[in-house]
Image (cartoon, rainbow over all chains, first blue to last red; front, top):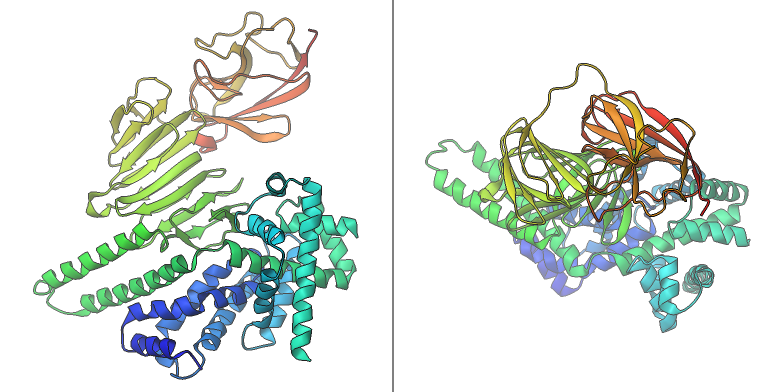
Length: 189
Length: 401
């Protein structure tokens, strides 16, 4: 069930007031982008898939049943778009960089084919794990992923050697993965 | 384990080379546990990039609304075209058109709505958006601020939305697309683009800015090449104004003419020379003074294969290496130097290994040892047209100082 404000906005969109769609997109965009990103291989832009999913949902808004979960519906659309992209890439074998790309794309494709929606829990757990990192580690992540800084420029910023930053980042990535797995295991029990 | 960590880190940080990728592939294929860890880390990196580095929530929402609104506008237009009696409905059509134009101008001003899309892209092409490199594919929407780089071999073709304007980026071309209420703009840093530009709305020209000059286009077919120190405009149809960045001097270039902005040389429009009756040939190399008047260094007018360049004897001179061709003027000349097959492309005579005309520019400072230079002439600009006959020179640089 959606928030009453979202329900009202969706009702207005159905009535032809496109501007009300901004309320809907604002409410769900971060969640959808993170959810799509988790199932998106390098080379496919999760922001683009989320964008297209929202546009497609708008075009088909008459098929949306009021009172049902809008996010689940738009995530299903995003899953379909993502699966189409993955299949398109499988057909186009040129320029492949071997097993590295293959192993990621085939894992994601198999996972998407085996379910009707997108995996949500992992993205949420990761957000939670990042929030609980010490501030200095959060700032290293921000330098790497927000500013797209190279290892050497991060090293310059934080006063460590590039080798140390490389090691730190790998350790951080593995800690985040363990944190996510721990949270999911806890949720299952 | 350390090596695996290294390879994964380099992959995630975008620094893994081809040999490393092959090694990582082998490692993943051999060990399912490592493969699972790798997939998890790649997926996690995707979420972190999106969460921390993607467009702001406001920008994303504006982008979706922009496309939604455009879809509605398209619907209004298609309905209007089905209505009989266009004369009676003309004021309404104009009003609707104005609304669409204003809406598009607003969206372009926001810089978030797609303004063009990729029609064709070859291997190695890439898009840099908001500081993140992305792989490109046909059909991908392009936004203001997107930086495009074509690959080493194939051109990259894009088409603007809502008009038949097309842009072809020759291999190794780098540019940034810009859009705003005052029209479209392309910042060309390096390479060559060919454009078929539809008449532009509201009298706002499409502006192409290169390092040495800018071209204002209202509707025409043209080709613009930019190398480090010169910009060449060739107009196939229509007329284009070329303005030099340094002093504001300008020239109107009519159809089948070209103009070259380079240093302080006069800015003039010259007729495009007809294609030569036979492919051009590189006839030899000279060691020349890097600074004007760029005469050959006495004793080094004709360099033979294996020629010695003694830095001690030439101390104090600023040097460059010139390739000579038959005919003397060709469309362009590509230099390969040691391991770099695209070391420099020259589009203006004299054709020199190191780009730079006149005083104060760079000179050639060779390192001691054996070096190989190959010069390949082309009838067209920036390595286009018919390839002529190349020549290769091996030189031995000694330093007895």
